[in-house]
Amino acid sequence: PASYASVVNSYEQIGPNDIGEYACAEDYVVRILEQRLGEQLGWFGTLSYDDDWDGTNYWSHGGYPDDVGGGTKPAWELWFSVVNSWHPGYFETGEGLDILTHASMNHGDSGGPLFGWWSDDPLPGAGPGPYIVGVASGEGELSAVATNYSTAGRTGNWFGGGSELPDLVNNARAEYP
Image 1 (cartoon, rainbow, N blue to C red):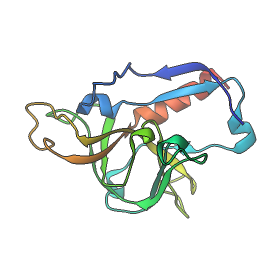
Image 2 (spheres, rainbow, N blue to C red; image 1 turned 135 degrees about the horizontal axis):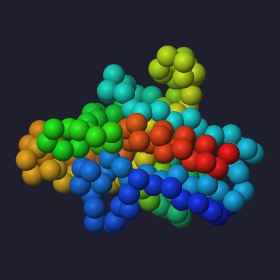
Image 3 (cartoon, one colour; image 1 turned 180 degrees about the vertical axis):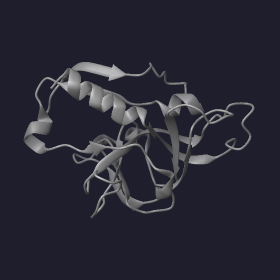
Image 4 (cartoon, rainbow, N blue to C red; image 1 turned 90 degrees about the vertical axis):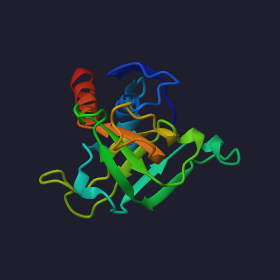
């Protein structure tokens, strides 16, 4: 099934050349579909990424079918690890997170989910999942804030996440039940 989005919610507009720490950390949207596919197919939960999960390999992501050989099924990678995550800026403040991985990704994976699978509760009371904790945002070196040398020069593939992601989803679910 397919559906058009009737409403799109985001925290801020991210442009194609905005691949800095702040833009990556908040690079996600929630789309309210005209035809509620989640009611037919089910849906993921969403959580804020926890630093205790760094180095664990229960992460997966999916991308667009046309990105790999003109395929008809989504491109995906299973069971990779996240290297690190941090709040952007010199003082690392704010709710957004820059999430770094060395998982194999393609240009068309942008906007695809970073999700985890657990057989038990990832956080107390959450249930086993799966849960989306980030959205693919960029690849290569992420432009650091000029004064924050601790994050400068880190390369890999990037997801935006943090507590604003589940907040945005919960707000959309409350506003458009």
